[in-house]
Length: 187
Image (tube, rainbow, N blue to C red; front, side, top):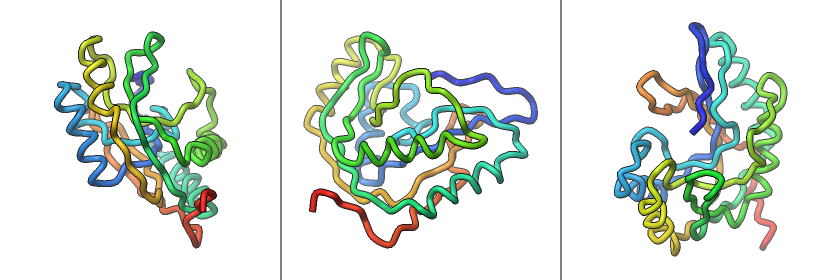
């Protein structure tokens, strides 16, 4: 994971869609089984804003920006299924977002506006990382472990995280998607 440098008076943040239990518990268990050092530091999620540095006194403005987006965003159905990888470009194995990916993409574009405007290092591809920076054998094992994984749930919030000095990502704010119904274009 690319972590931008920060100076005194700055915080490192990220914005993501958290995966709910019991799916998150199972996915976190896969990372732990593979001895991924990030297993307990990073909750299972779909990234909307990668690690980003802001001034500490901007957190209220960031939260307000995200709350405005959440207030006009309707909850939606997310479905995860099967394994994917970014190898050989990056040593990452992930679970695919097979439903709701278009909504993730739209949300991340909105999040990356205003004071959070930035270019991405790679094209946006919604996914749930289950192994990162591990040896090839562990990455292959991750592919096998999640090959048959499936989950479907209503995505009703996004979270603002802060990256602590101990390397753990902690929720700073949970922003409820305030639409009146779950959007499900399939039904």
